[in-house]
Length: 211
Image 1: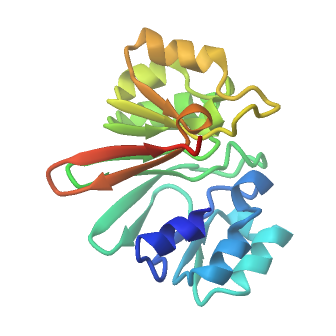
Image 2: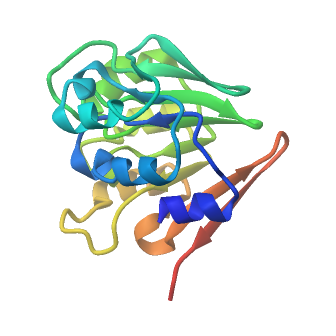
């Protein structure tokens, strides 16, 4: 699906592909995507880089890089700060890459599957604020700490979750947090594909679902 969308948009290659952590629901189809859309740089964590699945991917890309906080990634004119993880914990979700950067005129936070503990200990002290938040861990109750979301104060929360998934994502606790803070949310389980067209002065949020 991603490869087809990129082809429809005329994207012939990816300057960078970020694998936030090595869980299969995040990296399982990366090889298929990379076989159809060339990737110039693959970015992941030191822990992920040691796993069998990610090693098979790094073996088929020209360049790859393992990063943790504090570090920075550049993609053309865009710069993203790696704001977590700051240390190894041995737990894949807690070691998810969290990226913070500006696209057009808006601040974005991409959270992977990071946890409430990381949000509280590593992200809240950085006083981050974002216009767009990719909600962590598909909206699981293991993330989206109330105080963290309140301080971040996003204008829109984006949730990636499969329709009728067996985990019940997004969790009602996470949805209640967003509702209590008056933060609108879009969820792929109900809205289908979500993409944001960015310009220097505005963002247009689009959705598509096949009936």
